[in-house]
Length: 497
Image (cartoon, rainbow, N blue to C red; front, side, top):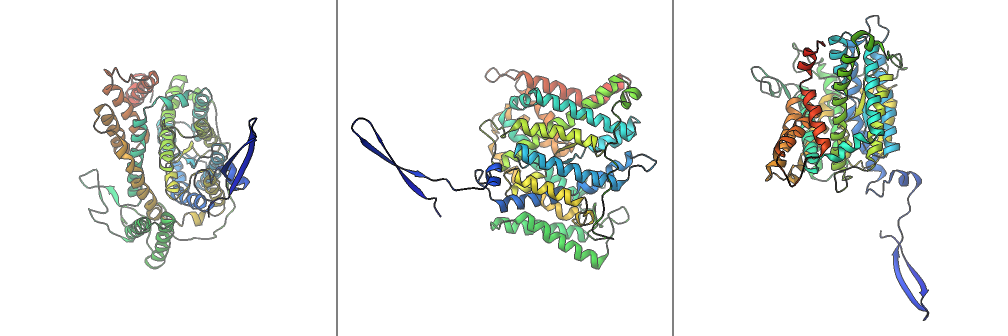
């Protein structure tokens, strides 16, 4: 139905002439719609809710994986349990995701960052012999440092200094990266025998979990090409239902060397009560200055620096990718409310340290919800609410196997890869850095490494470019990434383990 047209008439001039014009009365929207700009951004409440659900299911694996990764770092006295880490992960993810939605109005959800949690366990605790609490202290200081960079405008200035074509290549690279993550999580791609990776088990798609992934992915494709609303969510729900039925009959166990065709991270079955009271004993388990006394200031600075770089650029790339997919970027490739987005992300790192669950950061899996229609922060309220509910319904969250959730990651990888056509491949000064960015993300299994490789390649390729001089901040970033890539030898040279 077309909006109503009203006729406005007014007199003007000394001759009493009359000017008449038609004006279109804008459609009335509610306070929530107006606050989140849902109609203004061409979205609807149903799309935002669907997108919020899809983002949650695409990210729900972190509720299982984060406790597993951090289990290596937990105190030996049992004062902090895996159950407590799971509850804390849900709580911090829920609060920070809602905060991002309300303050920045951006469909970008947050949770404990993969890679950062591994650094806590294997670099800080196992490698540097810090306690769990001392490691959380460094996570806290890393968050404080990034927050200062946001408040001073330095983080935003760096973002503005990056050429648009390079920003596009970041989005494309992330698309390829998350597709690779999805294939690995689903067990479709695995470490190979004699080769780095291979298809399934010895080159074949074997086992019921592989069937669950294939059915979910193909169903999503069929629904999407037929323009069915909720294609991604329907794919996840259908494949999860199939997984539950298979588990009831086949009684498959978790994947292992002896059981290569078992389920991935979680087995799709309910054990015990579906509702449980949360254990929040991980909250406040922070030693702010223990690492300084144990390792010395120089070693701490290097460790915080490596944490910061891993966190700093992942968010920048993810933010651009989400904005590009949602059509929210301006002509310079910058999202709306960039400073608010970066500030909430920085504060989330602090929250992760204080919550004892590792640094929380923006999740590229938010692109799954954007692919389903999310365009505003209202989707975050839905996703965050589901994270908070999952504190009490952990068994139901674990019901969704990675084989089902990964279908969304692979499919959204396709959506994000489509932007590759906008890169000017005929210009080697742009094409080579873009290629390096896209290639290194999945090959190095790191968004940050891909961005760093692209930035350094851009500087090298444009050293003699008089038409477009390299921005001074690009030089700073390039030098910092060069240090980051050589951090191991630097630490050895300085006698830092």
